[in-house]
Length: 191
Image (cartoon, rainbow, N blue to C red; front, side, top):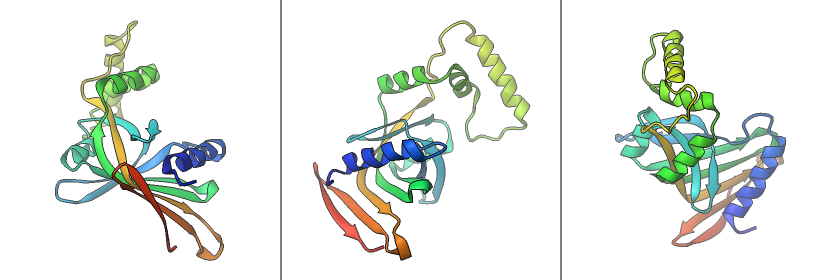
């Protein structure tokens, strides 16, 4: 298979069948404007040839770093399959229609949580957050919960995608795809 997106789809479908929890979990690495790295787990919520999508509060640390330095790396690690996929690329915000559609698909409590949370900011104690959640719940009682203006998604548009498969005796297989304009070049890397 020489199409990195078809290969991703095949591996991802297998992971969705075999991984016990969060087969869509991916590590997201960012760097601030001074180049200091940060990494955290996020959930893949959409993917295709145009990129890999996740959603977040745009007032939090990860969004701030991505807006200052619009490059990121992703890592999918499926331990039970003994596989990982590394993605590196540029980052941009998804359009409002895409963010609105995904937000509408979330559970009501997740929607309310997006309004109640000042993501990544200090929290004096958990009760403060729970009280805010109750206030927001009362505010939107009986009605639709609109997407907060500070909440949206990012798309990582890949420039490099590496597929790593564990092999016996650390003789792993590494396939690298690199974007060259509108086409992809494929090669192998030593383990």
